[in-house]
Amino acid sequence: MDIRVVFQGGAIVSFALRAEESLQKGIRRIARKELEYVHAQVTRATNGSRDTAVHEARKSCKKLRALLRLVRPAINARTYQDENSALRDTARPLTQVRDAKVLVETLDKLSQHFSKRVRGQPFASIRKALLAYQREVRKYVLDEDQAFTRVETAVRDALARLEGWATIPDRWSSVGHGVQQVYRQARRALAVATAEPTVEHFHEWRKQVKYLRYQLTILQPIWPEIMEPLVDQAAHLGELLGEDHDLAVLRQLLTDDPERFGGDEARELLFALLDHRRQELEEEAIFLGQRFFQDSPKVFARRLKGYWTTWRDLRQQKDTHGAQGELHP
Image (cartoon, rainbow, N blue to C red; front, side):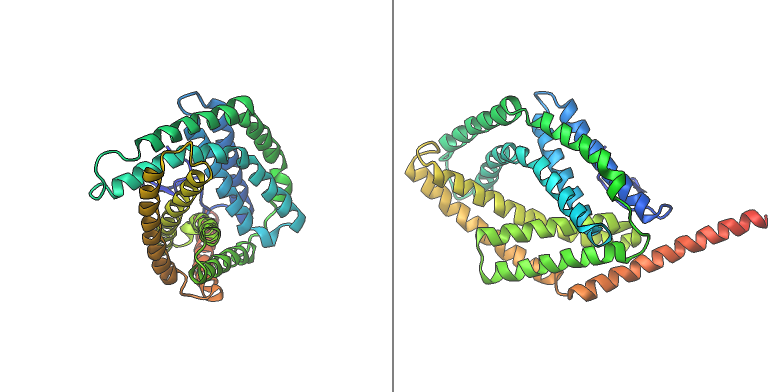
């Protein structure tokens, strides 16, 4: 079972707040579960599961950084910077391994997308070179540089610090300002990417959309029927931007080392298809993004605050009725 799924058979699991716990308890539980999950991934990985461990560990680090941004207004500024930097540095050694694996998948996905237009296997030599590159990167990062060992040490240190920084007042402002800020940054990144569609600008928009998606996942139980579609929309938008980013990384790698990754004819055809697909993805992402981010940050946060207030009031009423029931059976 993926411990980060919010709903599983109707039950709320780890990466979400719970009505019966304080905000501080919930934030600590979520952070601890994610850190423990990273630790389990990197310590139990075998040769056959190391790619999965890389993927899962990096994803959890991103979720933890989203959580930090959610509670940023409620914690010390220096603490936020230190913990955010530690998580970023924890995941960084694994990024090259992830990219090397995903680039092969990206090429396959692109070939499948244009399968009716392209005959034969014009990119076979490029794919073979990408697989060799993947093996080299995996060997260097995971074996020679011992990245999993470094991640394990960093996670143990982060767990030891958790109780010290995760002191979160049980009120909306502890998370409300954080989600509003990330929404604002994602909305602004959309405007920048639309006005100047560079790889860097779309990548920045992608990062902010991912942070927002994870924050909305944490807050999803405050009104599941409304929040779940928001999470799904943010997830879909993130997938579009993620595919666009992977294609951009693939193009850059092949451009930087043309002799290694196929002949000029194959690369020129690949680049033409790749650029066309990126345009499709970016146009769809902008269309969906403009709908998703149509509200101002203040209006968006105000809506979530209303859901939160109702959720907390219902919990308080339940607690009060329960106490009265005990006093007056």
